[in-house]
Length: 400
Ligand SMILES: Nc1ncnc2c1ncn2[C@@H]1O[C@H](COP(=O)(O)OP(=O)(O)O)[C@@H](O)[C@H]1O
Ligand SMILES: C[C@@](O)(CCOP(=O)(O)O)CC(=O)O
Ligand SMILES: [Mg+2]
Image 1 (cartoon, rainbow, N blue to C red):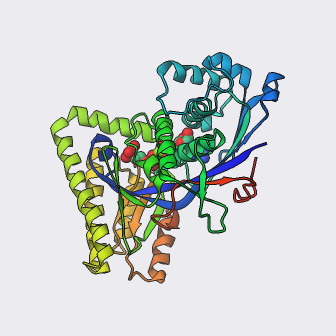
Image 2: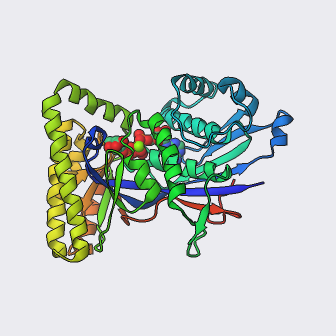
Image 3: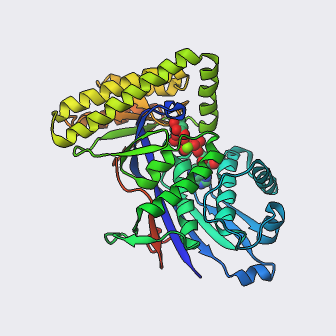
């Protein structure tokens, strides 16, 4: 019984969210919080005996789902192993058939937001592996629906595990004793294209930045589907504050598009300004790699770009009173913050200058947490998708 696992990181967006959907540049970086997906393929004989099913165990919401293979074949008009090798979009008919399959499960009303992730799962699984029996387990360090790209990490880790099981992609080693191995560029590109199709189901109109940074890792500039790796020798330190105000990326992206169609000229200027901020911010990040400016001066410039970008995000209508509370609180300590991801609640980034003492940082965190927010300190710009084949001991002892 073959087992494989994949893990993919969440992300922060330093500049350019929303505007990137409308063609502006944006800058994003992977963070060291991961979604892990493991997959065990079950014998096809189970299916022939009528006992085969596709099972999904979502550890974070604590829910499990099971679809008999025969039911999947009937609803999706597919054969057992009719997996596709090339990514393709989910047609409206297929999406409607998947929605029908979900209606057969009782998803608690309080967790109805999971439906989008479940639809993406059924689309990716059946497109890549056909209706073969198998069991998938997903666990994550990321808060869901908070702007840290949990939807992309879900789609990337899922596509990575499914394509590994299908024999389309493979690890190339370099795990440095962790068990998590790297993946070659061509395979990463394949995973990224599939994950993008999954993100389309969850986000409606994604730019592709979240799945790209989750797949390839590092810090990237992204514009109209083109990705540039940014090399910075000075680590960028960020504090993340989760306001715990739930929101949904799809609705926020649609809201910005509606504002753009009501005020096309004004919003085009806003998107143009964001583009300039992202372009300049990415050149500052790279300049520092050659020591052409001092670290403190680089941080001042980054802070100014973040502040300007936050103002433009307010213009787009995606800030929130909880985000404003974080901005006011950190400003008391002379620290600059901006929302990250789709906004409307969710997470806020605060730039941590190199010279800030730990004592002051602890005070900032204590004051933010006194409002009921949750703070994380993260490493920025790390690994993208990694695979674990064989015994999968790296999957937190949590193998299916
Ligand atoms: N670990 C997970 N398990 C199940 N579904 C997930 C998981 N991570 C993400 N999702 C899906 O992604 C959705 C959140 O995506 P989104 O609104 O884009 O927020 P974000 O990507 O910022 O976390 C969830 O509602 C769920 O459907
Ligand atoms: C708002 C947007 O720029 C980023 C959304 O990120 P998240 O799902 O909120 O983590 C949308 C996109 O680029 O697809
Ligand atoms: Mg998302």
